[in-house]
Image (tube, rainbow, N blue to C red):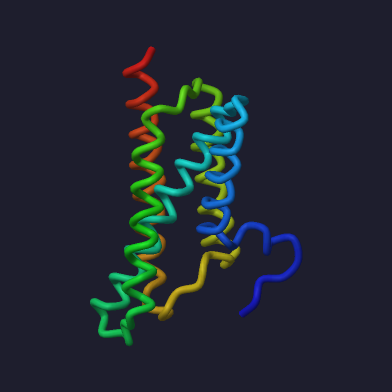
Length: 153
């Protein structure tokens, strides 16, 4: 079913990640870096890059019609995750940025899976994999960011 109204703003996770990263890079280029924007961009790139790769790979494993497009989506989303992982190490974020990122990721997960506005799945049978992977990704990204923060301060 199609998502209606304002909830549409919360559905396109990968394009949102790419937009945030583009804005973060632009701010760096014009010498006005925004650490919170950069942290959000990296968090979303990592989360939805890996999530999309997991969903595409799972589709292949359950015998779905895995095409070159699926393969390309898997590789390009892994590239998104790699961008985020490479760049996040250089983001000078504070504990407020970290707390807000974690809250936003959790809110996004709740909106996606409680309201049913998660990104498109190839098969309904993928729902449990989608939920488990998104929860694990939120937890792992949160822990990694906490590790980075503690390492710096």
